[in-house]
Amino acid sequence: MFDAKTYETRRELLKKDVKEGLILLPGNGESPMNYAANPYPFRQDSTFLYFFGIDKPDFAGLIDVDEDKDYLFGTDFTIDDIIWMGPQPSVKELAAGVGVSHTADQAKLKELLEKAVSAGRKIQYLPPYRAETQVKIAEWLGISNEKAKKDVSLELIKAVVKQREIKSDEEVAEIEKALNISFDMYAAIMKTAKPGMYEREITGKIEGIVGSYGGLISFPVILSIHGETLHNHYHGNRMKKNDLLVADSGAESPLHYASDITRSFPVGGRFTPEQKDVYQVVLEAQKTAVEAIKPGKPNREIHLQTAAVIARGMKDMKLMKGDAETAVKEGAHALFFPHGLGHMLGLDVHDMESLGENHVGYDDTVERSAQFGLAYLRLAKELKPGFVLTVEPGIYFIPALIDQWKGENKFAEFIDYNRVEQFKNFGGIRIEDDVLVTAAGHRVLGKPIPKEVEEIETIMG
Ligand code: GLY
Image (cartoon, rainbow, N blue to C red):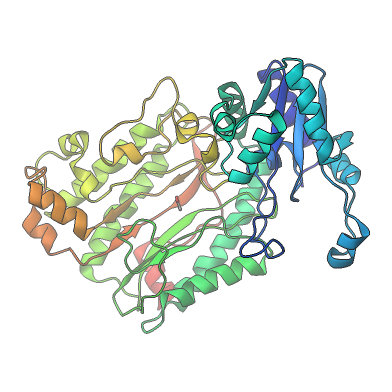
């Protein structure tokens, strides 16, 4: 974990923003796969981790803003536990490591909260995304599950987003540790992916590399020769020469900060001329987006600028026609680029998404669009120094979407459906890097992972 001072300062800042009452931050418990003692890999709640740092199940943090006191609730292990698990630190020892001096058993939390409820004190908590947490909150506060889900604190959500969205140098260093693992992954898989292999062999390689660093993947690996399915988790296809493989994956650093990288490359090591043309459009779009990143710039504008590069590229390839800027305004490019440019990155791969995507990516200055494609943009608001975001444009040929739009003759003034038909089996291409907004502009994080056509062909060759 970071130094205790980091967690103390974070809690102090939170107390300044949330001016009264009690802030309840439950940690996660184990999540059983098939019976209680056989759990999924443990993943701590990211906001608990941010303010209390302890990476172990069954803790809860409570911040008393009125009394200026921080509490940690947990249960010390018994000798029976220690026989199975080996020596374990006490709750007091763990709490001292994150600058908390008030500790008590979990059972005491309910008592303390009951008293606070009777005294009419304000108790604030964040949206629970695990059913177990929702049930616990309902029990602790003596309310129904439905009420526990509904009565989340908007004030607390806003205060947490305000803090977590700005990454400190030590947090950026953690993200770069995760990116070093990503570098190794892509170096390995570009050399490994050969015709005749199954996608799962490449997925296994990625998971093995992450495991060898002792951490977790930051989200289930997306890897497919059907990259036109945006989040394809099926890995059972046998790869053939000239298939385009999209690999979108990430690792967690030792302190659980995420990386998120996508590369697309041809099985067999050489792009066909058609693949190269589409790839160059995506690459130009991605580089344009990265270059546009600077404080004060709304990410929605960068998304639309990127969409315009894609529309112009599609027009050069005679897949689109008419005025590219008008096509983007009306949303015609979304046949090929139907998702948002990127999202915040931090302790979560979609950072803070459990707090509500609109609270993280939108604010009073920008409202989510209802237009197909633009509606999926996760981060639209103005960029600030300290934001870390993904930049991940793509071009996809999605047969079902093509058929639907063609059937409706949708945007026929902008799309040449006869030409698009020739690309129906193309698949997809996405290129993604992780970028820090700096005072002067931006910095692409991590060691550069090859993305130029020549670099990829050289490595794969
Ligand atoms: N890279 C995975 C995602 O953005 O959802």
